[in-house]
Image (cartoon, rainbow, N blue to C red; front, side, top):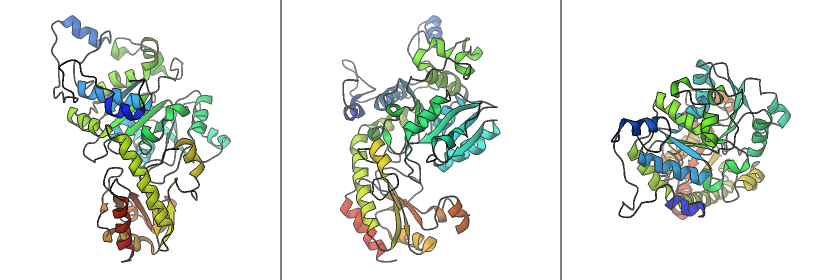
Amino acid sequence: MNDYSINTNCVQSGYEPKNGEPRVLPIYQSTTYKYDTSDQVGKLFDLEAEGFFYSRLSNPTVDAVEKKIASLEGGIGALCTSSGQAATTFAILNICGAGDHVVSSIAIYGGSTNLIGVTLKKLGIEVTFVDPDSPMEELQKAVRENTKCIFTETISNPTLVVCDIEKMAKLAHQNGVPLIVDNTFATPINCRPFEHGADIVIHSTSKYMDGHAIALGGVIIDSGNFDWNTDKFPGLSTPDESYHGMVYARDCGKAAYITKARVQLMRDMGATPAPLNAFLLNVGLETLHLRVQRHCENALAVAKWLESNEKVTWVNYPGLESNKYYDLSKKYLPNGVCGVVSFGVKGGREAAANLMEKLKLAAIVVHVADARTSVLHPASTTHRQLTDEQLEQAGVEPELIRMSVGIEDIVDIIKDLEQAFEQV
């Protein structure tokens, strides 16, 4: 499908039925697969033949979705996981172990911050968090001899920081390590990080890729561009005794990283997506290019409306000309940013919570980035245990509302905001 546009690949790539086969990707609801001889199965284990032998490692439904997502991001291969957090975990553990170090942007999803800063620390992996807006010389100070990767997000959740991917890629590559980019909010429709120097891309597919809040999932995509055949990455450049002594960098070529993630980490940790969830994800992907465009159009309209509202103290949306990341958004996200807008309401925490309760169309939910408009007030929900001073230190203002703008008619979304503001 390489000859087609990304829009067509959303619909068509990954699954190509043969004569007389189902037109729609089937759900292969099976854990195992029948073969005629042990030799055939042995070749599968040795990666000498293509096929499926146990769904923890690969399943035909999941495989088709992996191929589609790899095509959308322009990667050599992909590995679907049971959640976005599993994708982040595997992406790092595939090249990091006890005694290693990660440099991560501080402007990332809170769950990722906790994973990298707390949970992985318990496994002996250290992290230094950096401000991605810092100049290169400051970022370089965070890199150590044992640093194994740089981690960032294209658009951060929920602070909407737009990352200068080329700068971070330069930082990574001048230190001989890969750049891992979480591209969840941008999606490959608005940004393909590999084209700007990233080496590994991950997604929480539960968000825009699914688009309907019906199936948890994550994915890791390998660009195939990074040279793993160095002493810095012994897990890829030396024999893996747990997998027949395979040297991934030697035996798997450009697919070394993603192959290791599958046959080692997925094999041992089993964060496997269900075939039904992969099927539902594929249905979402078929309209990704249409939905993302509407999300972005609606979000920009909402942001402009909020910017003119006297009861709003500030609006954060990189698509606004007044936003500090406007120039970066035009460089990396020329077709649109995302559907998430954050803003502050006069009156602080109480006024923000009150406003949300007055909304009728927009629902109060913890989820983000699906077809329905939703809102969340972190100060009274996810961060409710913090004082106003602590909230400010965490970058979560007491008056902050995160609005995930859906694909409904923009007239109705604005009307909902109007009637809610009239009551506060």
